[in-house]
Image 1 (tube, rainbow, N blue to C red):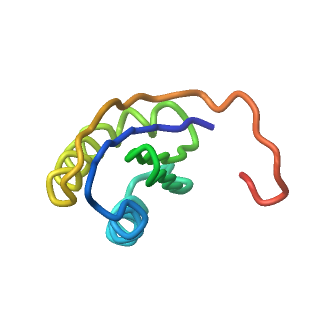
Image 2: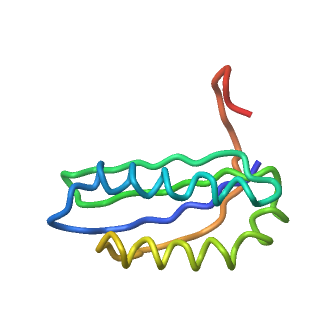
Length: 101
């Protein structure tokens, strides 16, 4: 399993509400990519930061979706009014939980 993580920063906005709206709008779009497994959005109003993690079956799925994810990330950031701080792909080295793939 692989994950792509993007970090955003924004001040003066309700990150929880913005992340929920972004997630709802991205969900159907992401499901169109082969190898997509799921989305997790984390927010901290205290630090003004948010993290978006998408999960993928393999490295090829991450590579194949990269262009589309970049366009979506930039568009969502501009719409919500946050800055993209970083973005990268990672191998999931360990996971635990009965419902995780």
